[in-house]
Length: 293
Ligand code: A3P
Image (cartoon, rainbow, N blue to C red; front, side, top):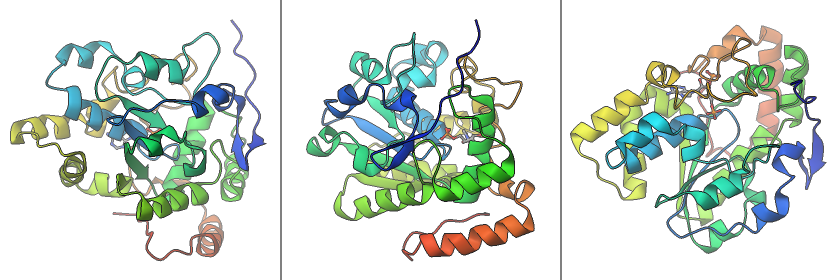
């Protein structure tokens, strides 16, 4: 069967999107959250799968070992707004989840999140990654994922990223407005990919504190080991290898898992141009990213 053509970006309430994430919009907006739902919110490529897997192990690693060998991560932590033909929508997958709590993934910018999450006062874990590495990861992802728009060449992608013409819109607006939300919504834990790379155990401790969990030292050791990059890359339930629209011959989903890979992609001129533009856009001194650790 021929794959369908790559989708086009269009403006959706001021955010660049493709139809795969807006076709089910009414149902998404009417989604009914439960007070114990846990939402993992990210801009694409920030480490969503990593944190989803950590959460899944924290809640269900001990109680449901068979889950670890039989259910891929994208079914354990469904992607709320996705709607692709011939597959259950993310919203339906969430509704069918038998677990409690339900773990739910979204890439929606804060202003487009279904309001039920706020009304039910759900816990939200936001993960952010520095823009340069995020851009590189997103470029390779768009190359290999047939339901994403054509990435074009690197210099073209570089420009589009700075203009916010990416699926789920501008990285700058996404990370900044979720950061601002944190100031008024106390059940939001804001994490950084770079911190997870630096010290996964420490970040899991902070996450547990936010969630009110206290795993044993042994359990924590198992989780910290299980979520190391190479282990996730080789884990068929975590590495997306069962998703047909991804072409792993082009690039892996678990590609490099590093901070600083942007240096292998940005020219010196691009890096300078990027930094200048970044200073103009990211004016809140309290939100700081690291591009190396
Ligand atoms: P790279 O493309 O830079 O390798 P998301 O899950 O939000 O789509 O993010 C995917 C990015 O997170 C990819 O980045 C992937 O390799 C990285 N990643 C996933 N699991 C990881 C882990 N356990 N450790 C480090 N990076 C991880």
